[in-house]
Length: 480
Image (cartoon, rainbow, N blue to C red; front, side):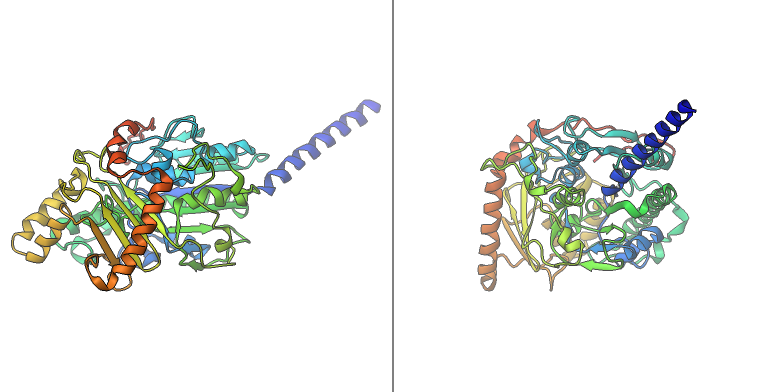
């Protein structure tokens, strides 16, 4: 009898311990980031595109907050992902060319959350390094493998988790997805692109990959719902950076290159269907997630000091915005682009930019050089534009502009959203240009960014230690 009582007592205590662990895990939300690959911010149904079909993402946007002015600090894959995961601008972290890595000793969101008891994993594209900075578990090398993600979600209910589902869609070559869903003849070509048959054909294939991405997204959310953890999981969708259509998307600091589609859901905390126009950047995500997990993000050591020796995040928590307490956040967002390390980017052409709510100032540090990278200027799409430009003076000027630009550019984004009317030499805007130029100078100094010297040093930062995407009948290898 006593033995039976002791056994029941032991079982009861074990059950209480397990329940206590589960309750403790429930105190901290899980985190799921779903990231696209080269998706222009406006190319979703919920962002106003009349043609592309994204029912899962559209529905998700209605369940949380749309962050309409979220920006990446770089228009290429690797620096973008490093900033999203580290909370640091690219030059400061060392991860500023493409195919890059952070400085040794730098910590990431994976590091910080793992340190407070989270399981951390990534499914799909990585494109970050070194491994010591990103101590994640590789769940699968393809974002199509939803069961691997589901297994990670369900593995241990006593421990909160952080997972990234990183798709390779809709990255060029645009060879996945439902091809017959989009008729090139019926598509509406966005105003910033040149309308010809090559563009339309590529756009149909690009939209098919966006729909493929939407299916991955829906499968992941279904797996989360089936796990029973959706109400305690913060889900963030980001579009990475713009598509590689010429000209003005990826590889540029125009808004179609650095502005993103971003939506976040936190049931019971973030108002469904809400919207924010507050300026923010990917590097604000790590401090935000840490604040959600109960950590004072202002006291976190990133392991990577800025020029003054400060070791905190460049980003700040956007939690007050998400909770509806304010719609004001940053006065300025900043961005950089490095050509060294890009395929075909042998001529150094460093670009820096600062943007406020209305104006953008771009500094081309080496305007005497020709700006040329293969995936912007050497593609069939780009060649078709050059051919059409032979009989179109306006298009010819635009094609020339993308390879030969002045040292300064200034745009009024309210009246000129596609950034085609350069106001840098207009005397009426001198005060605005000077203010933004001074802000850019101060930011570059804080980051240790020396312009051309930093551009040339990018060769020493190449080599990311990434895990390549697994090739299947559907998934392509990432080239950029």
